Length: 243
Ligand code: ADP
Image 1: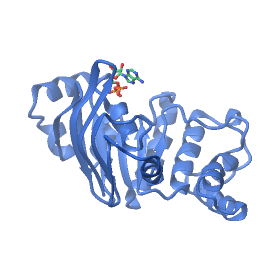
Image 2: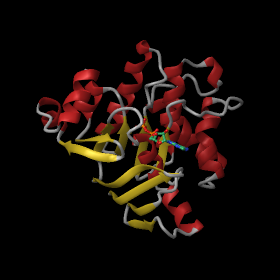
Image 3: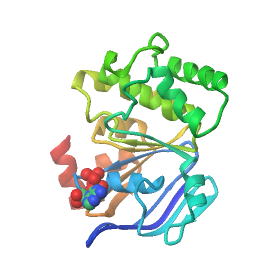
C-alpha cells in the first residue's frame, strides 16, 4: 500500500503542492489528472524523493518516512520500493535494450549478472521486445523505447510503478502499443500511479482517479463516476476541454 499524508512542496517562494493525501491499495491503479502546472509531476517525483517534499509523510509497503527529517538511509530504502517510467524514457543511449534493463538490477540491486540478464530478457519478452534485446535505443521506435522503460521498471519488482505521462512524447500512432502494455501489467495486479492526459485510458484502466488543480486534489473517486458526473466546476471545465 502507498500512503501520502499532508505532502507539501515549495520551489523557492512558490508553493506547488498544498497538502496532498493519497492512498493506493495493493494492485490498484490510480490516475492523476489535471491541467498543466497543477503539480502532478512534482507529486509523483515526491513519492520516490526525486523531489524532496517540504513536509508530510510518504509510506510505501509499510515503510514510512517523515519528509521533514529523512535520513539518507531512509530515502534509499524508500527509493527501492518504487520504479519510475519517464516521459522521455531516459534510456542509456550507448547501452542495448537488455543492458538498459539489467543496469538497475546489477548496479543498485547487486544481482549477479547472469541472473540480471535472465530476468531482464524475460521482462523484455513480456513487453513484446523479445526480438530486440540487442538493439540500441536509436534503433528503436519511441513506443519500443518506452516499452524498454517499462521493462526496466518491471524488472525491479517494485511495490509501485510510477508513470509520468508515459505516452505524451510519442507520435499518436505509437501511443496505443504503450497503453496496451500498461493495461496488461495492470491486470497482473501491480500497483501503479499514472500521471496521464489519456482520458480513455484513465477511464478504462484506473480504479481511482484524482483530479488536481493548483497543488490540491480538487476531486477524486471512481473514474466512471467522475467522468460521467464531475461534481466540481474545475473538473467539469477540464474534462470539457480535453475530451
Ligand atoms: P504538472 O505536472 O501538473 O504540469 P508540475 O508538477 O510539473 O505540474 O509543476 C507544478 C509547478 O511547479 C509549475 O508551476 C512548475 O513551473 C513548478 N516547478 C516544477 N518543477 C520545478 C523546479 N524544479 N523548480 C522550480 N519550479 C518547478
